[in-house]
Picture 1: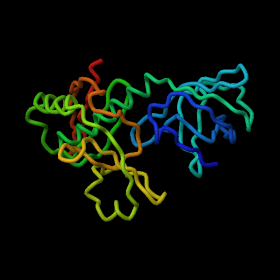
Picture 2 (picture 1 turned 90 degrees about the horizontal axis):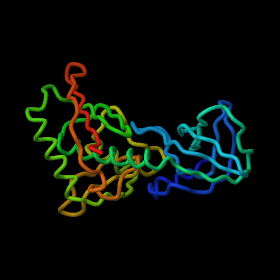
Picture 3 (picture 1 turned 180 degrees about the vertical axis):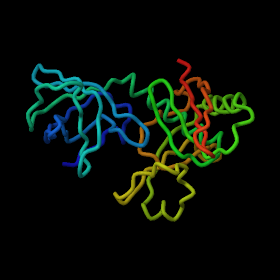
Picture 4 (picture 1 turned 120 degrees about the vertical axis):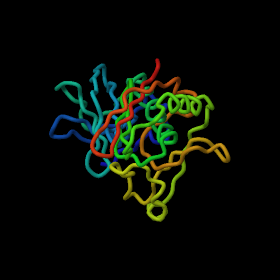
Length: 240
């Protein structure tokens, strides 16, 4: 019951048609193709709605199921579209797009703070990365200015694919210490920011991102919090 991840090839696809493959014991819906990103890699699952035959079911989130399935989780218990039903999928696009903006901004945050990343979380208003950072940054305002300068360059955000073996041979590409890139399918997706001499970042990632950094908009730094002996959490917020 593998689900085709439509968000992987087109993160801007906000509506699509799909077929119900199964129901889960918990009351979720497995579809054959999904625009809903399932929770993973610090990025929340998408919300939205499923419609069929005059019915509409609110979807609270999406999660990963077994064998490559994506499960849509209803916001509350309700009658589900029967297996085999053709349904219309619709994202809460504003929420998803804000996730895309925050996620791409966090990639750039790892550029202006070039330290190992020990954790991270994406939200619709803000995001954060945890760094292996024994001492606090000397000048957070300078880092904020550097981050916004990268955003203002309006760099393209593109993707490439490499094999699992190629990634294993280049472990330095993985910035995250706690979240491993999705492997096991034979190939790994790389997210590239900038091209040629203007490339500023390249790292494995399975999430959704904006097409150009200028789409992120202005970013403000939040708290820098000490989390453990050598870890510090750096939060960023969308300015609008």
